Image (tube, rainbow, N blue to C red; front, side):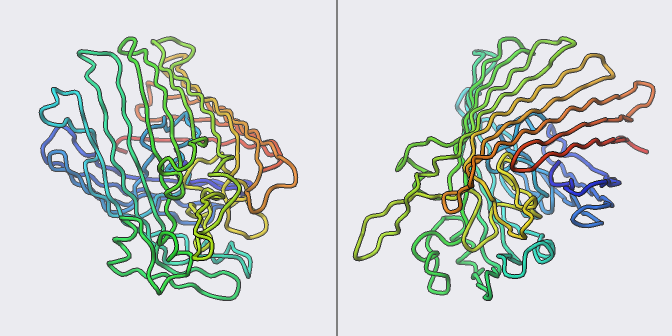
Length: 435
């Protein structure tokens, strides 16, 4: 949903957009998009969901503005969501440059391809945080954003049916102001600080002590790997693994990589029952262990436990407009009833199943089912282990005699201790193409 949703009852929106896509087969091309929504019972009544322009020359590309972007290794319609970028939150306005699509590396006989990017931007939820946060709760304003990624693919399907892709993606929140209790913390945002976000390093004397001891800003990232086998052109299997990290200890091999998202995706030969199936297992209970100690001159040992995924002691965590930017099975702060912008439970074991099919040329269905057990955080464990179950069933009708017109009927339900019991239905009418 890319954050275009509401947790309030009886909500709805009217959305309109116009887009020009990049023409990938041309040496030079440009694209742009405007995507606006008027909403009822949302966090705001008028939403600029997407507003961007982009250009491409050969393999290089640049984009400025807000554009919906999903994780690199997950099926956007069936996955529970990438651990770093799931499409669960509203887009962050940014300037993004790099190689947006896999490009063959010369002299590798079409076996090796590469893509990557660097981006800087700013979060836009200052007013929402001010309205949502309790009087003495932590909130922030004018927070800056940085992300970067590098991915490699080894593939030559003309010679071998198996392929592999993997890469590293990192992001950071830095700069801005943080209000906690009765004081503001001003974080620097000079050119030097932009470089510290790019190459994680310790903060200067004008930052809190914790930033000087560790890295300046809130840094998150993930290692990603995927291997697949194309049994036939339309029947293939892919296995993938994502390892999330909050600091250097989990980024490398100082501690065991117990946490992560494991997934399998199967695309079946054409049939009227099921087209694609995804199963994922999520485990985030370890977080380098329950003990943390920053080295001091008296006790020089360093124990880097209690990573506290998605949370941060200065910033309001890896969220935008209250929705978690990462995997939504770690429940977003917008569901908190106490005005605290924090991820209440990030120690989770979860299972997720998604599948879809096309019984006829005009009908398509999709089913998503998730189940989690939640332990809270190391700092604030839940009194009891809470379970949560979520389900979605939707069916889309696209009649041939109404070109570009479709209707989708969706039914959703939540049950369990984290979100309570709720049910909902949504009717979506969509028209694409030139009006």
